Image 1: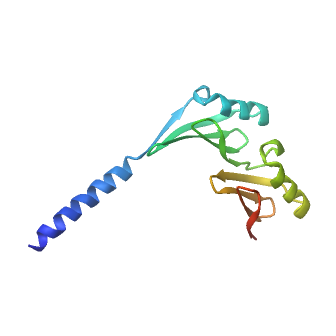
Image 2 (image 1 turned 90 degrees about the vertical axis):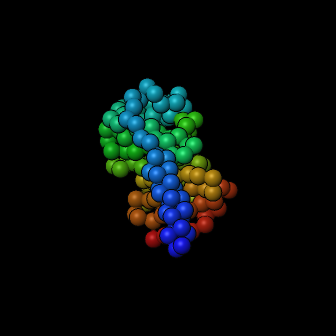
Image 3 (image 1 turned 90 degrees about the horizontal axis):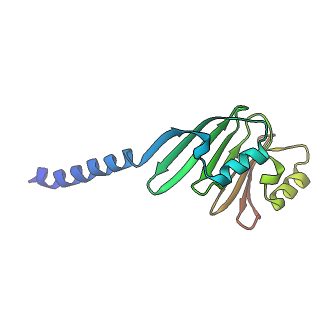
Length: 148
């Protein structure tokens, strides 16, 4: 009788694990397959750099692209071609891609630093500075937290 109770739970667990394992798909793709907005960001703000790797990923219903440039920078774009994360391995995130209030805050409070990484989502922004400080901003560009 105890086996009867365990069997349905085990089947549900196997089904759940199978769906999680197959919910994320990644495919290497050509730079030309990126949405136009993503290609514009790369050509305008990362001129002189080439995409050496482009990957399209799908998680559940969300599709996004990961682009690695020849200088080691990594940019993640959503399905519309809007950047969601920029990680400049050897330099700084282009000022034009950083919202003006964030750029002003960093220049005022950390004038010796540059932004090496920026990430945005529905809740706000997170920036990493060249001195190792991480700053979280809400959607209205108010500082939520500073990690040193």
